[in-house]
Image (cartoon, rainbow, N blue to C red; front, side, top):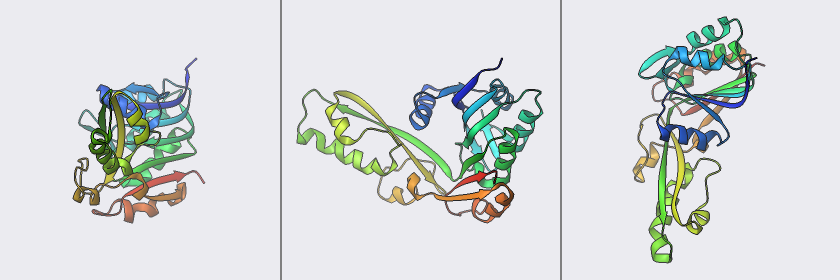
Length: 238
């Protein structure tokens, strides 16, 4: 019998930092599976009978996932999954974590149907993540902590949920790694100056658009327009 999974994260990159980032964002208890192709992705999804939450953590573009530089349409993935004799069912929802995948929101809806999920979400924006390592010496004082706190506060709007506060960082000795995420329509680089913060925005700046399955096409004006707003699309069955 095929196994079930709670949170299944499929990564298109086997680098340790990518996996560490996905676990920071989606929970240390997530099951991360690395794939090298679209057919691998289909095989991994269909190796489970039931998945509570499915995350597709690959690169992306409008309506496509990108694995090892190869573009595959989300519709193609959906049809391949649904055509299998025994295909997975997703109980809570699907998240596409790649850049701009919601540029064709109807493709997300087709995938949602293929795995019988109640909802699917994705971004019409570039998706960025990065980390900062804070080195806390054995003996600290205000002079030591001042520059570290300045760095922390600059990045604070971009904190991934569940990351430690600066007070917690300051009480720890040695290296403390803190993860951040950002979104942009104009940049694929982490912000390093105040001017960069106008181009790279935190999750709180995303415009969330929730529509039913039948209204997915109505999102086209926002998600497909060049230079349009940074949108997180959420499509539900009803």
